[in-house]
Length: 598
Image (cartoon, rainbow, N blue to C red; front, top):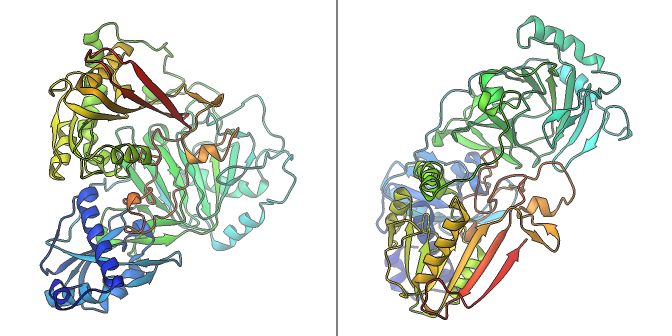
């Protein structure tokens, strides 16, 4: 709504509600995404709730925008619940601002969402992605005909007895059948001494012989796994065990296309489109070093261009849209290895890697060196990506901060990107972090933050009414340094002050059971199948403001985000420690309590 128009008459209750939500969207975009809106008209608009991350496809949004004028560009960043629209003229963008603000539209899931528009100076998005497939990876389109596809799909009997020789199972995220050898998902391996009777189905012979002749495989497979994925199902990122199988692993996609995600140990992620009736061939580096997986979601972010059928999904935000998944069946073929693996990646090869018992730093200097190499340097390198996945405040921390008296001085030790520094405007909050790049992000968001080590915080003793330290202390390499970090927090507190501390505790139990933090784990007690939390398409930016960003609706590997700390298959829990300081002695804590969350 135009501000000049507002001043001419009293706003109705509905208009006031809309204005509040528009302003909330504006502030959230700035705080979580660093997108600054302007109060004057420009050619460019940011469309909150109109993004790939909350179920709005390009084909759906563009016609709505074009009703107000000619759209020069529509940029839709992957995973984000907003988009950028640039009109040919400012008059057209003003028309869209007035006409579409508060407009209710239906997304690709058939659910109603409301658009909120604000002007921005520039509509741009920068995201670096490699423009090549992982080395050794190949996608062969139309490797079989539609008639052959139909024949293969009809040959799979999912209704037969689950106790049969082909080891049929219904897993958490899909149905599977094994032939030749049963594939064990708990260790990505097979029992070479227990082959399944019957071998591979005869229907596969002609295809395998053809692939051998054409050079796609060097060995005739003796193990096959058939997976059936319904929309929304997937498989966690993994590497098939080196010692279990020979070099090439090939997978035939039937029934529907899918985006498979590959990730290098350095953090490089490559989403790859696997069209229907295509053959994925993994050899060399892509087979031995990169993880591959399928994210659980009902829509994939894909290229909008008709000409782009297979291969890498590029970062061209002007050519991205959503594709609804269908029922997909994959035939994955492997050759069981009978000799140790001699690949070129000994550090990640179970045949070549020597198992050594864990070692602990022998001195404080050695502990400091380890932290510098494996904590400080890592966070400096990943600060930008790390910040983009840290957007949703955890409820117990919000509750703690909002319960503090107005005017309290609060220090966030290890503040990261500062997502807690603005929770309660009635507090005076300062943050500190070891990462210069994360502190810079805090400053860009207008928060008070500085660089320091959590073992030596340059703040006067007894000057804080409260402190928080969220998922920080476990980064210290020794128990002594972790205790020192706790003592430093206590030193900052005034008598009667409080501290809220979160740490990861893998060994922790709750009600005599291993604590399972992931939602998927809680629903699947006792299963050895992978634990991957559901990553459904994100909902409204304004109606569910804490969920801004995406629950990874378009990324692949189970990378860490706010709702999924610790990754897949982990048994992690959170310990909340509250300390009431009643003594001026920094090393004395006279009373405290610990609460453990499952």
